[in-house]
Amino acid sequence: MTALPPKLARRLKEARAALFARAQEAREAEEWRRWGNATVQEELCRRLESLGAREDLEQVARDLRSLDDRWAEVRTAPRGEAETLRQRYQAARAPLKEKIDAYFAAKAAREAENLRLKEELAARAEALADSTDWLKASEELKTQQARWKEIGPAPRRQADAVWKRFRAACDRFFARRQEDLKKRKHEWAANMARKQELCTRAEALAESSDWEAAAAEVRRLQAEWKTVGPVRRDRSEAVWQRFRKACDAFFDRYKHRDELERLKRVAEREAVAAELEALSAGAVAGSPAPANLVEEVQRLMAKARQGPALPAADEEKLLARLSAARDRAVSAWPEAFRGTDLDPEAGRARREKLCARVEALVSAGEAPAATLSGAELARRLKEALATNTMGGRAEAEARKRAEADEVKAAQAAWRRLAPLPGDEGQAFEHRFRSACDRFFRQRPSPSSGESRAR
Image 1 (cartoon, helix red, strand yellow):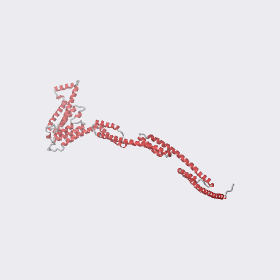
Image 2: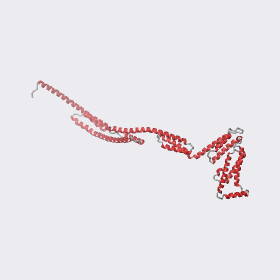
Image 3: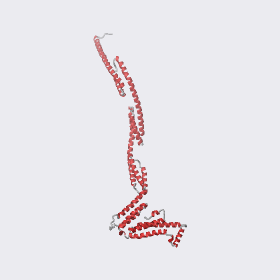
Image 4: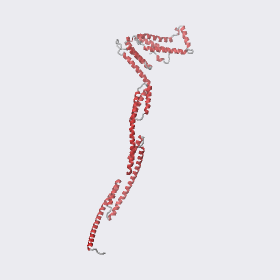
């Protein structure tokens, strides 16, 4: 090898010396760095070993990744310590990593199951989204929403998509339900108006006494009620009870209509009697008679005789009241009734005639055979034999009915007579009543009991 020129050799020597010095510095720096890394690695080992007691494995996993990253930064250590530290770190890391992996595997399985459950809920919600069974579908979707909250999380990448499916299906159903509810509220309002109208009409009939027409109309209202659609649930029972109350009120009265009609007729007659009584209520001896007294008495008596007949007990009671009121008016102002049908003087002759006629009929039925002439006995025998022939009995029955009708007519005429005051009037009343009673005892019939003198 040829020798270098002195100058170049000197320069080479100087360069080698400088390079050696630099290499020595680098080796020393590396040794210091490795020594520093060993200190850091020991700290990382201690921190890693402390993670084993932690229960929050997700945080442990994050801490482990951070420790691994830091270990990679300080992976070189002094040769005498590097392997020992590495083995220490791996000994602490391996079981921890296994525990973390098992945790995340179980978590992944749970999230996969949760995803499956949520997909089922989403599919069921989508099946209900177009349902019109509002109540049932609404309750089911609310149950599904509560169930959704109970299910744990799903894998993050799929969780948002399945949630959007489920929410969109629920939103669609409830938006449709809200629109339908708005429409039904209008229908409910219209139905409520119709039902309230039916209630008003039923209430107007509840006190009606036009029995058959009202009964037919109430039944028609009940049939119409059934055709009216539903109303709001919180108002349904109240309007139904209102309608039912009106219908029940009418039909309860309808069931007792005969008694109500009787009470109504009695009340009408009592009102007439009260009006008639009022005419003579303030009568004072010598006071002037009220204007149109006779016309008013005649009008009221005629009004009392109008209308359907009352049961005998009511008729007798009211007739006595009317007669007493009429008699008080006639007795208070007899001159006002002079020359009228209610004139006491004119009534005396009529009373005598009516008494005589009824007594003649009674005498004809009671006359003993000893007091009759031979011709009269022969006539009666002939009549008796005739009753045994064909048609004779029917003729006799017809004659009896005619006589009974005549006595009843006499009773009606008697009631229309003007009162006869004093003992004379009472004597006539007793005489006429006795004659009528004797007549009907002679000729008993199923209806004779109602024809006694009143």
